[in-house]
Image (cartoon, rainbow, N blue to C red; front, top):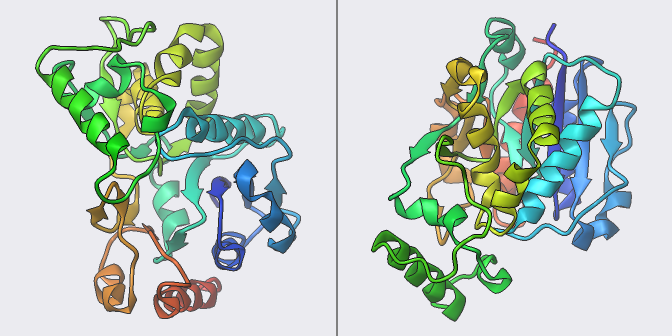
Length: 295
């Protein structure tokens, strides 16, 4: 069987997180490492206890668009690597994910060298390259709904960059021999690839500095390391997660009406779920997966 470590970032809905944990902890070959947003530490006592669940004592504040998400991911990654355990795969998830199909272990067993993440090359003239080319003010690195001054400024700065104007250049630049790549923070990688990431960062302190003032660094940081390495040949452009369509920079929540399309999906996970929005779709997949563990 495949030995897996799930790296889980959470900030709300502990009851729903517990549903996901029950889905994930199905044998002694699976461990879960949890980072709780420092702003949400009160929910720790509400999480289930299990010998294969490890809650990180070190915690950082996590805000959308901010380097804190990357910092939390690195804390999780280092904790798993320093555990003394040898995993086959490391997989990043959030507390609003759910497993929607079984068969993942068999799939990973057949693809032990593969890296499952979505990747897209970002040329230097592409507007998204502004995410690392500019030194973004902290107030722009927040998730805003509707028409907000910070969102207007964000769009304006990206458009200026597209026109060849950079009013607030990042003092830490990505070297010319490095290409930028984008992708979601949900990915599944072999253990040796995870080890390579930390070794690379230890040997190249300049790399983190490029992204610390960037915008939504977590969607660029890991993909760019891997795609500029020998491991890029192992990348499968698929993060194995069904993500709902986006609205205002974040995925829309699934409802009972989405069950049919999720059922026919070839993905093993999906996001984004919320019990307070629609409990039926959550319970459907929780019951499906927990009842399938003996299969």
